[in-house]
Amino acid sequence: MNLKPETLTRIDEVITHYPQKRSGTLPLLHLIQEDVGFVSDEAVEWIAEKLELQPINVFEVITFYPMFRRKPIGRHHIKVCRTLPCALAGGYKTCSKFESEFNTRRGEISPDGEVTIEFVECLASCGTAPVVLIDETLHENVGEARAQEISDQMKAEAAKRG
Amino acid sequence: MPAPAERRIIFKHIDEEGYSNDIACYQKHGGYDVLQKAVTEKPEDIRDEVKKSGLRGRGGAGFSCGLKWSFVDRKSGKPIYLVVNADESEPGTFKDRYIIHQDPHQLIEGTMVSCFANDVKQAYIYIRGEFPEGARILERAIQEARDAGFVGKNICGTDYSCDIFVHRGAGAYICGEETGLIESLEGKRANPRIKPPYFPAVLGLYQCPTIVNNVETLCHVKHILEMGADEYLKIGTPNNTGTRIFCVSGQVQKPGYYEYACGEVTIGQLLNDVCGGPLEGRQFKAVIPGGSSAKILRFGETFTIKNKDGTEKTLAVEDIPLDFDSLAACGTMGGSGGVIVMDDSVNMVEALANINAFYSHESCGQCTPCREGSLWMKKISSRMVHGEARPEDGELMVSVANQIAGRTICAFGEACSWPTQSFVAKFGDEFKTYNEDKKSRAADSLELV
Image 1 (cartoon, each protein chain N blue to C red):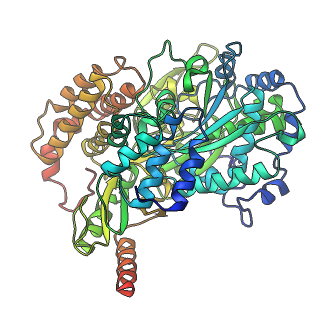
Image 2 (tube, rainbow over the protein chains, first blue to last red; image 1 turned 90 degrees about the vertical axis):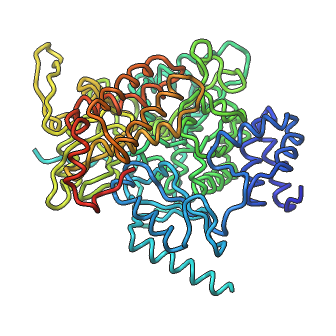
Image 3 (cartoon, rainbow over the protein chains, first blue to last red; image 1 turned 135 degrees about the horizontal axis):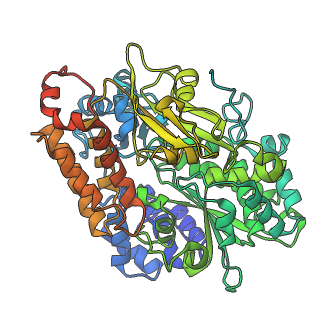
């Protein structure tokens, strides 16, 4: 596994938080996914060895929790809330807007590699619906117009980066 | 009658100008005074005080906090754990988010006091994966508290030591269920455990006695000790003490969070006076009062409930006081305090289809009735919306729901059945006439599924 030294330090630290190593499964998956972008077969084996588990113990956790992914995604991850309070405020239109702006469909990487758009279940910010989590930043009251603005900004940043 | 003024205890400093989430600001406002005093007292006295306050859990079940603590096996010789349930995942609920982001030390102090009271040496905060910023804020706040001697070794200079670590979830709703949460904290799939024998108070985390409390509940503990149980008891109504944070979402003028003494406001006061009523030109149609699994209430229906003296009274939806017992008497629940409002623009078949999609996605898959049943209900309601609805579909879904509730390891079985049972019971006509209704509606009407 080719992990950043900082990730390795954090991994060794987090394992000490628990009396049983197996509790480190979710924290390690998060740390590796943040570092590498997804959880590869190699990562599954590596975590299992690190925590003295069988690979299946790690694999069954990945397939249970929606946030862990086995494949790379676009540069930015756009998670649009699908659940009732957001849907009542137009969340489906918000999601469609992002899809058309980036010329992609939910669950796929956009052709320019910039984004992966997903519908997710409740993000626990129903009072400011519809909400969208982009990478680690929550955006509130994202109707179609706001989705347009955010998309424009993201595209401008991508153009600047070249 | 207009609504009384808000009574902010837990949310006192939320959105307050100049209030920041660092320890200096918290201490300037009297923060950690309660902990410093608590560690000089006897743990059992603190437990008695919490029991006396009548505090009921704010996560959903409304179970007595003092009673929960009293179940803890203190003679096993094993360590006792406390786990903060910050998984906040019941749709419509968004109170813990603001406590974590804006006043994390309030939670840490409540947690430490509760740890001291229960002889806990290690606590974990299980925070949902969708709160990455919240997790960072908590970690920083815990470190500040550690540096100041309020967390970690020799708390407040005493020989009592207890640490807190933050543990992030990864997007699974079932982790809000306390035994599922414990499995997840152990590094496994969050399949809830069967009770008996796995009552967390006896066989919880690592098979040790464990207390799992909601974020807001632990914040209340701090305030109970600050004001004393006798004062706390004066807030709210008997058996429904303290304040509650109502998270209002959906089709209403001013959605948001509002804190009131339990039972002090009615649904009508909250939605009309506090939240400004329905959107322009619309009328309220239905409300889910305690998170999306709570049974729906239809505006226009009435309830006959018993008074304490044995007489009966009839209430409209607007008249129902927002407390645990009144809502239960009206066939629904206070749950997590998430109030979801729907107006006359919403088709109830489509709203149910949205909720069914949520629960089928979130079933852990362990018990057959829930795993299969939640999916069937989703498939039927989605077929109604996207294909051909049959007049008998509502009853068909209810027959599925009736075979889930009560037949599963955890309460998810009820949570996924109650929406279908209540939507069809109260809006049965809409399920019978969905095809015709859909044809007569504008093509660009609200999309819910």
